[in-house]
Amino acid sequence: MLIVHHLNVSQSERIIWLLEELELPYELVLYERDPVTQFAPPELRDVHPVGTAPVLVDDEVVLGESGAIVEYILGRYGEGRLAVSTTSPEYPDYLYWFHYANASLMTWSIVSWITGMALGPDSNSPLLSALRQRLDRHLEMVENRLSQGDYFAGAEFTAADIMMHFPFGTMKAFYDLGFDNRPHIKAWLARISDRPGYQRGMKAAGHEQDPVGEGNTSRVIGLDSSA
Image (cartoon, rainbow, N blue to C red; front, side, top):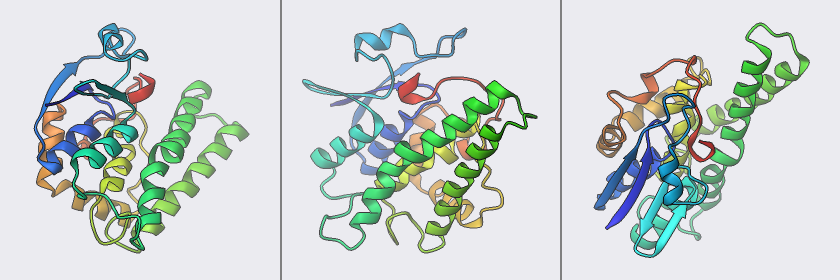
């Protein structure tokens, strides 16, 4: 039995969603954020030394980092589902977008968000302007990619879509990336929302409704592996 240690409103929902898509059995251990600091509770340090979510426990294996956990589950239990073969023409796209989600998109989103909070929403700082312009270039690239196919690796839904969804869904509780004028991103989100596995996963993760439509940008709390 796979055990998922899940912090509310965090990237650990990716793991729950993946397991629901694969219809694999799992046990869910829930954690609530500290009401004062909004960070993960100290109990998570008993599971993983960093004390952040997600954490997957599989017998003797204790693994952190959502991307690593997704790859581990797919490699050991996925039986080829939601991944792309290394011999497929779509493999480079799958690999790129799978890792781009956290390595680039999340990084620039968080940097822009924190800088904006530090300088204030009305700041005329050249730094903040440059950060927002760079983030906008990232979003334009995402929009262009989705204009070429229904999903990030092409015509089929894959784990790359699971990785890419969080910045546009639950992250709206922290920082709205502003996809209202990006029709291909909106259409992709609608396709995701129709998936039964997604709906089960978000419900199990604690969302009362689709997180794409939840929350506002005034909430200030930590994010997944930094919380």
